[in-house]
Length: 329
Image 1 (cartoon, rainbow, N blue to C red):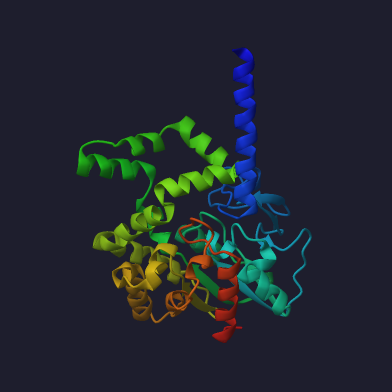
Image 2: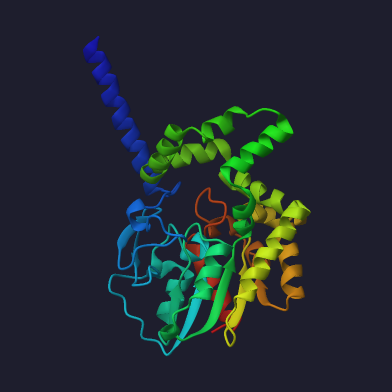
């Protein structure tokens, strides 16, 4: 009996390893997670340690003396003019090597420009406000590119506690999934597995369609007019910090779920419509790249596998071309 048990465990381990290897070889899903050693602990704003080599979404990353992402260790800026990049994990380029991100590609193609990519996974408006308020003078920034992620609005309203309160208010009960989400052990187990096992990410994604779930969580905040009004006030605060003499351009990208069925469901683009109306009212230069993604025949390849918004290498290639073709450099 003991031999049979050991034999079955051995077979299971072999099978698991073969499946894990297959998922990685055929690129069926991506590892998730951020090496905690990279993050500055007890920081008022999310920040990464300077001059570090670490791992994010299974890819090697390097930081400069500011904690910004750079192509390799001890990277030196040598351009004559400088751009500051604001954004979160999308413009950071999680899951893609730096040289294949659109910022990395532009960095190679335009060596006369210093691209200071302050984007970080988890950054939102409060982080952008702090960055813009304290730009080092010696960087000599000429332009600011702000890649506004649709889920910037979520950080104002979607804390775990707030979600549970909404659940209690509208359903008078907390469903099983919500209970599981608040279990510390299961949370830690989930963080560990998604950073180590592509097979786990693949199976989980097949079962729950994370792209759809994350999109509608964000979409519901735009439907709520009170929420969007509060978001506009936070955007006002950000714009009030804009330094005189610096050109600001805001970029909007679609989420994967919006591009399904070649973007036929126009109702899903309410977030873009509201943001465009706001930016026009404030007379802010912006470009909404959503239609360019919708025009792609292979639009589903523009994103990481099962990912709500993060671009794949193909998606970054498209962004590089769009930024060049719009004469932004």
